[in-house]
Image (cartoon, rainbow, N blue to C red; front, top):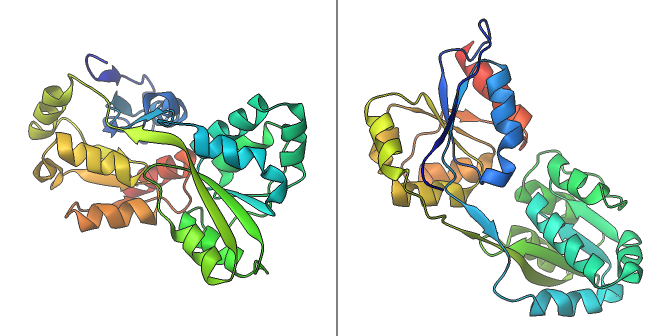
Length: 267
């Protein structure tokens, strides 16, 4: 990536007309969010502060896949975890994919659920709020004692679900199925200058890692008088812990809900 990707919407009477939104999401995951913003008249600048890459080793994951029959439940806390884990299971053979379909699979939210279901695998009921904390609460209310769970996750994902299960007597294995890294970019100076000139109205974050990488690249002081919009309470807490003001928090962790929340803010 050599520079920010800037798009200009053409909707003349849309609610976000005249607003420029900085999108820090990974480039391969930002398309839906950008499309929704532009349909509502927003101008977007794509400045991904995270990149999703394979884990340094698949050894732990493959070992877990080989003993898939021993697990009572599979817990997936992100669409990336779902995609990478199921792809790895499929590489192990059709029999393993069928075995996974027989397991109780839990998903943190709608996007993760869709990433699972597209492989013909059903998902248990979703938590009332799409985040790891509420998934942990939901699982803790079921009988998990002496049951074994597998949690495929990213290298920066928290342990809230694993801790909750273990506290209620479950056995938990966690395996890394993707890594979140800071991408190389030459656009940092351009973004700093646009923030200094007040040419960006809203800065959006979809995860604590996208936020921390942004802070490492761009001074958080430049966010003081900008609108900061985040996709959930976990990211909101990470922002506040880093003295970044939060103006908009999506009620549900989806692109559509964050867009709706931004629109409501300006109504």
